[in-house]
Length: 56
Image (cartoon, rainbow, N blue to C red; front, side, top):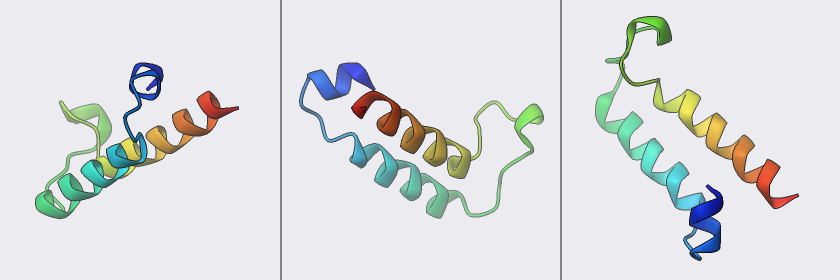
């Protein structure tokens, strides 16, 4: 996230990308412990938290 911000990328676009993945996948997600990739909704929340934390 810091690298993206320093490189002038719009970090909010990561949220859009995760939303797109969520929309395409529908409900085809296993619980976190059984999945090789976490649920996009969890990723979206983690991205939002990271953006807030870094912008302080």
